[in-house]
Length: 93
Picture (cartoon, rainbow, N blue to C red):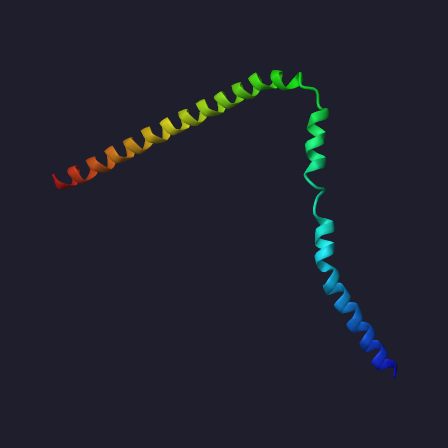
């Protein structure tokens, strides 16, 4: 009789955990989108314009660095191609 009761209890626990698993996943999700949207409204608007030029200067510096790097890379490739083109010519002589 005890084994039947133990099996029935185990089966009930397993089925309950399977049934409640979607609810636990929903509970683990972050809060609805309304809460984060309310937080930025409380932030004063004055620091944002001051930060914009700083962001723009950082972006322009970053872009200039990327352009410089790309130019350097293209020069290196061109040099490598020129060297590779000269080697077979000198080998034929």
